[in-house]
Length: 130
Image (tube, rainbow, N blue to C red; front, side, top):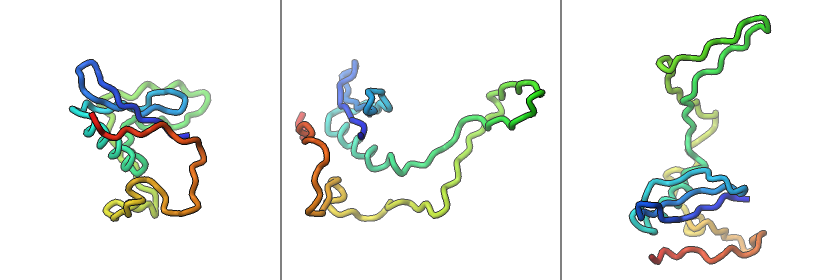
């Protein structure tokens, strides 16, 4: 089951959205937007980019495995940490960036005539009207 985007108004009267996991856990909360259209555009950007984003590992390197008789290693001081970018997998292209999409691909619908939704119809979608 896919996550759910929820659009809401925060305490400062700004629009935000949050991505909820199927179990109800909040996975991400957006920056503030001035109107619903901007929040909807932010959701569209996340949908398009999230699956293809690169991972940057900012965590400290894992300690090497030592003999059972060795003492527990001391924690790594924060000053020695450095950002590392994980290498891309071989054959891992840009996955369609720069490729023009058909209207069916852009809207997320399938052009195949035999396609039918497997779940009951979702509630009405937000139309963008304020």
